[in-house]
Image 1: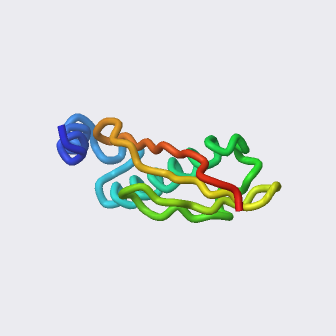
Image 2: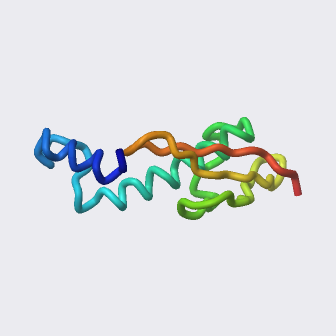
Amino acid sequence: MSSKEHWDSVYRARGSEQVSWYRPHLDRSLAFLRRWTRKEACLKALGTGLHVEPSTFAVGGSGGARQVCVPTISGPRDVQVIDVEVAPGWVGALARVVSSH
């Protein structure tokens, strides 16, 4: 089932006022979740959790693998992050530490 088919079935079963996301904002909501999930994966790979402010680095949009520079207390760290296809309507990301500057 594609993402569109998934959401079409959700909206057939419930009205837009009964779901947390509704069609006009779906793309923007999914884009936000993809960015947040990428940032969270980077911070988990570094083991810092939210001790590093997520707004201090950019992870770009969805797509292929991307190398990200994350500022940490011990200096900047390079992390590679990639989206993972989980299921329709779900987002996921994997990250691994590449190097220290």
